[in-house]
Length: 262
Ligand SMILES: Nc1ncnc2c1ncn2[C@@H]1O[C@H](COP(=O)(O)OP(=O)(O)OP(=O)(O)O)[C@@H](O)[C@H]1O
Ligand SMILES: [Mg+2]
Image (tube, rainbow, N blue to C red):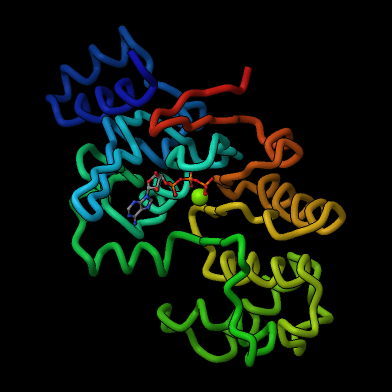
């Protein structure tokens, strides 16, 4: 029986009579809740099929996956293997063709557009290979943009942006525009923008793909520090130096996934 099933069984038992509950406690002690890892994502039978000009591409061919809160997971695999497709499903940017994508209690496959939008705004931090910063805005303004949907006051926003830039080591560069920053620094601004909302998970698609080795190490150090603080990290990468830092490594090939950690 999985930990997940055990928790559910215990929760159900609390709905039974007091007498039944006592018997339950006598014979089977309640599990230590802290010892049960909380599943952040649960994917079951996930497929994603694209149809373009009559041609059908099965980008994901049946993925089952559980990711616990606080894990640092990398996803590797050949080009076209389905990595970005999977990340978009995890990021509530897309829905599967079939199957379930649970983020906590919510199945993203069944959630409406408004709900997906709320989840993207509040719960998911996304980092892309190409940084996607707005060139006319300063680092501070780029990060601040992510707080727009949260309805915070000006002072709270300023404090949060300052904190996020400090966490990626860019407190001194808040007034710089992207063109006045190195590639590694631009990607750190993009990470600050992703974490400023205090998301449940940081998703990154090839975050070091446009960077040379020293800048890659800069980004790796930032990601690793965030992971050590307890943030869940899911990183798509072609770079084995990045994957080596993760405690769990997945591989996606032809839309099928497997764990290659050991
Ligand atoms: N919007 C789309 N319309 C049609 N086909 C798509 C679309 N997006 C992805 N595909 C196809 O789905 C498959 C998986 O693509 P995906 O982008 O997930 O691969 P990937 O593993 O991220 O590859 P890469 O390493 O090159 O980024 C590919 O065959 C791709 O051509
Ligand atoms: Mg991709």
